[in-house]
Every structure is written in C-alpha cells, then in structure tokens.
Length: 93
View 1: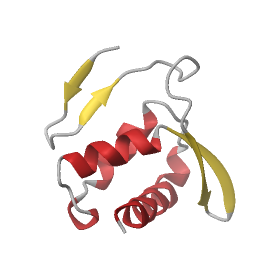
View 2 (view 1 turned 90 degrees about the horizontal axis):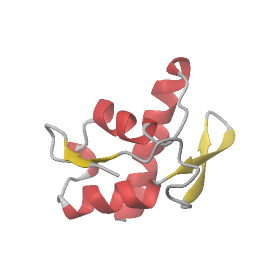
View 3 (view 1 turned 90 degrees about the vertical axis):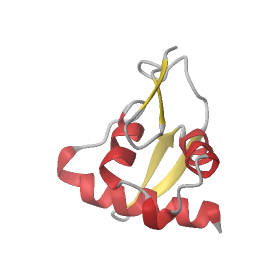
View 4 (view 1 turned 180 degrees about the vertical axis):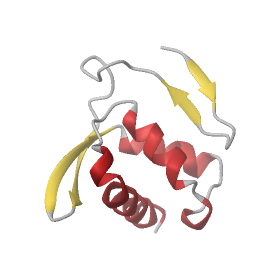
C-alpha cells in the first residue's frame, strides 16, 4: 500500500480493487438507491484530521478519492458528489 498526498492535502491510499482493502462499507442513498461505498470512514477521518470543513471540501478531489475503491459512473458523478458531501456533513455533525 502506498500513501501520497494530493495538492489539497488529502492522503491517497491505493488498495487495488478493495477486495483485500477496507471492509468498511456504508450504504448511501444515491439518486434514490442504496449504494455500498467502501472506505468512507477512513476518508472522512482524514478530512477531519486535516480540519477540512464540508464547505471547504474540493468535490472533484473527494470523488477521485472515493473512486480509488469504488466504481462511480461518470454519468452519476454529480449525484455521488452531493450524496458524499451530505454524508460528510452528517459525520461532522
């Protein structure tokens, strides 16, 4: 597993297909459907550790981070961004 930082300061962690990576799967409502998202807790902990508020999150970078372990269809990218940012707002409280 290799770690590197993105320009925004988030850690990039490569885990391949996710089959041997994080077992952390959260069901998220995306466009009216429940979708399993892998690694959400880890990503949100990283954002919180970096003191990045939901208002300051770079949505494009966020979606790319989630793509490392999840399939995110390009045609649904906007819906995923909105849902994941909403989940982060809930996580922060």
